[in-house]
Amino acid sequence: MKNLFYRYRHAWVLSYAFIYLPWFLYLEKKVTNHYHIMHVAIDDYIPFNEYFIVPYFLWFFYVSAAILYFFFADVKDYYKLCTMLFTGMTISLMICTVFPNGTDFRPVIDPDKNVFSYIVSFLYSKDTCTNVFPSIHVYNSICVHIAVSHSEKLRQNRIIQVGSFLLMVSICLATVFLKQHSAFDGLGALVMASIMYQFVYSGSYVPGRSEVSEKAIG
Image (cartoon, rainbow, N blue to C red; front, side, top):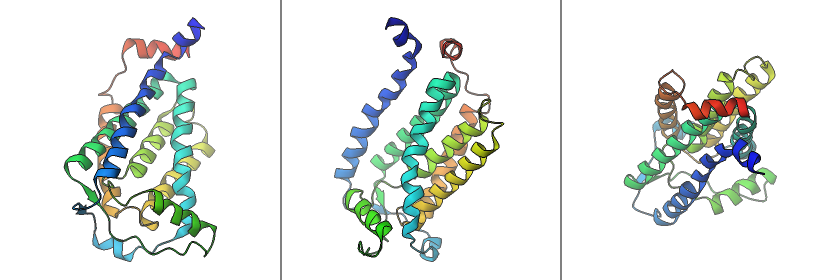
């Protein structure tokens, strides 16, 4: 048992959930009015499409599957992915805290139209239209694909590479076609991911010696 805890001691990083979730839920309850509307002209030309609810919800599987894979397969890449994910998510929460934001263009949904509309209606009822900039859906999807594309073990698997890219793009598009986000939210996420990439994957970020040694252990 002791060896098991030592082998997977890098699980401590996941305790970030105890910071992120309370903070996010607090903002969801606090930011209900008097927030800045995120809107750009292109938003008015993007039609609502309920079928994008499928890739939107696949985001949960996409991100969690990537974290679990690297957790067991490559600790060094696991630390890099978590560094990108959790740093960006924290920055997003900080922005929403000091700059309350949201959207105002959600359409009226007929839940009886089809099962996809029903799910979108359910999503709208549970998820507010606030705290949208930058888009965490977009940011995390970009981070996951970067991790997949830089993985020595996954780099040669064309099916995984193409599949990851298509899923990333689909999730990013889903945020605007479901009217969950403004295109500006996605742009903000892209900029933030580009900046974080320079720190984590361009050679500026080097995992500590103990982190690297865990790669051999895992």
